[in-house]
Image 1 (cartoon, rainbow, N blue to C red):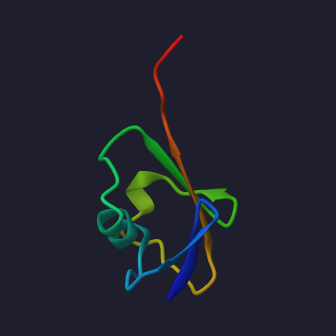
Image 2 (image 1 turned 180 degrees about the horizontal axis):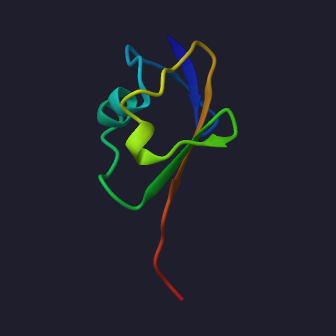
Length: 65
């Protein structure tokens, strides 16, 4: 299926947000994910389904000052 991840088209076999995070090798902490402009809590990633054409934004926390 095709998704948009941070405005880039990605082809994936993942059917849940958790599977996609593993496929993309996302870090275990320090990120937030929104699907179609809706933030998805990490504890819902296992059950949150992905659909063709979903727009996913991955936000990484950055330290600095």
